[in-house]
Length: 477
Image (cartoon, rainbow, N blue to C red; front, side, top):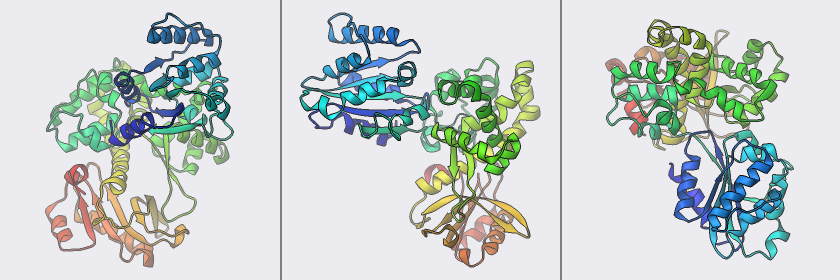
């Protein structure tokens, strides 16, 4: 688990405040939220309760039984959630102790009034005469639901001392889970399939990961493409678990995710693909962004042309490979289908988009200030040459409140499966020239597995060209 998230939880639990505190921890399934919280509860002798999808009376009965065993007094009879929350907070009478309500979405879905009960328990009146020091954490995986707890006029707005949104690991952290010494090119291909979700690299692939580059095809067909693979159904399960995305609109959300994964990355293109006006698509996109399924990239130098991408490599893989080719995979040998058709789809529709996101992560998080002293605005963009728009994978611009007036500091090209050559550099030079005065001093960044000799020699002789190969992406700055 990343140090920042652990530190944030520790800071909340160790707060010297002489009252009970409320915290929220949420994020995608299987990224390690519960593991981290259970570890802290056990270490601090606190209370942990995992809700299940049942009616409120049954949930309260389960909670009363768990609380009674924790306190050693036998099952508590809880009439309602107001009494349940009060009983949980009472375990911290005179001492700091963590209490976790996990899978909180199941609780509030069955009983929305629990939010008001918690708000009242943490209000000024309830806390004034209390000696409780409980640190109550609400944990959940339904991102949009958890975000709504503290937004707008929600009862819990202003009550939480911690709101930690946990994200999947980046590609560098994910690499540490792979077999020691695995080639970086293979590591990047594995990341393009399962991303940075720890559960996808452990139990959901039967703790089996490729050990060499030649083992990648075997692993993929056995652990991901096989009809018996649990990952086959993971994406649809993620949507079904979020009450804001489930139900009658689920097909619309699935179609929208599929449109983005297969190249429709502007609102206009998505609208055309789905046969619906942009005004109808916009609220769906907003909901998917809130739920953590889609990211919105602003163009660094344009006001109103955002690009959309799926937030996780596995989602890209699912909607480009598993979802459209599911029937064929169930009816044929997956290894044969992979070699004959899907490998090409993977290279064009999965590796490429995922590598572009990795490149933007490197620019914002790992590139040094010497390499990139200016990183005020980073994102994809485009340039028009002779009436044709050319996609730019990463553009870096300086600060200015008006996007159109920003100076372009760097222009980057990302090539996931190609050796970088001088022709790629010449393409970037054309793009820079087309931007005119705004980009006269812009650096040219080339990202790829490696570079040929001619390009390496020219880059070494120039101050405006940077080559970022896999070694530098994973280990350098």
